[in-house]
Image (cartoon, rainbow, N blue to C red; front, side, top):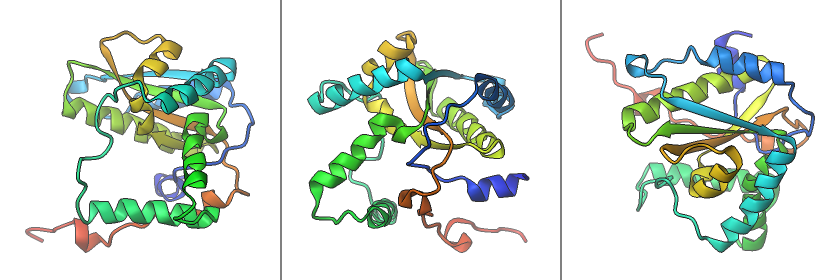
Length: 221
């Protein structure tokens, strides 16, 4: 599989098979992802990988914590008062997903129930958590993002799929209790990883992308 094929296949998978992922495969992917770029070669990322009972226990605890709303998020997942066209893109993404699930806009209970699947890693057998030292700034945050993207493409190459979940940054204490990462590390994002369930309608979703002339300017050509 070439890089273009991996980029084209990668989506945010929201329904996984329960099949376990071998430890050796995870180690291979993470080792290869270490070649991701970072400014000054700081390599500011840390990653914690959970499966089995530790993952199930975290999911169960997270449900209760999320309902209680007792934790403060590490950062705002989206800017406050989101504006067009960003607001439109987010809205379309949600509506397209719920349409494939057959959940109407008026069915708030079903939408909330589906959103809760974030806490269950969408059925994935592996959950990953990415942290960065709190003394780092936006440039190092972007480095962590590049590490995650590299990992996601390498997963596709090996027949696996992922869903990046910044949502987990809203439950930092709950995650820390499961990973044991030190206080000086900020929880940046979670990620579900496993084998895609191709029978699930939600995995048919291909989110929209803007035309190139909407996002790129070519100067001096």
